[in-house]
Length: 124
Image (cartoon, rainbow, N blue to C red; front, top):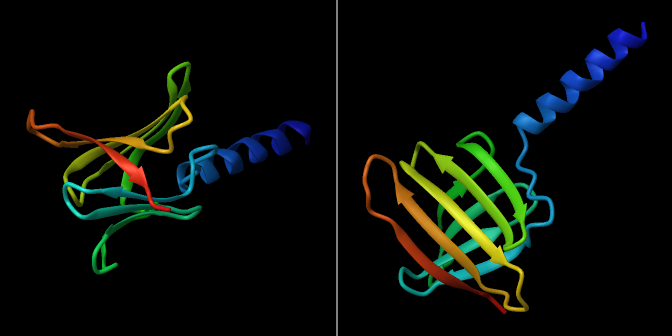
């Protein structure tokens, strides 16, 4: 009976981990990409890309449209990475261990060598 309970518990934890965006200690709020008028909004349930001028949602990155979601702490900071087949891109956000509220954004279109990297500023 104990083994059955343990197996059920492990399967339940695995299922929750697969189907939920868990950003852990990654900060929530909005960051502005001034090069593209993009506003990256991080909440508990999703990550959104909005037009920073109009507020229109450009894309809603929810757990059903992203894959390979990883949150990796290191001695350099915290890195959040995921792929999105619908946008055909991989996204990486790095929060360095500094007092700065900026994030480093890297966007890599799948199937090309083109990489876009910029610092995005916290929206006050």
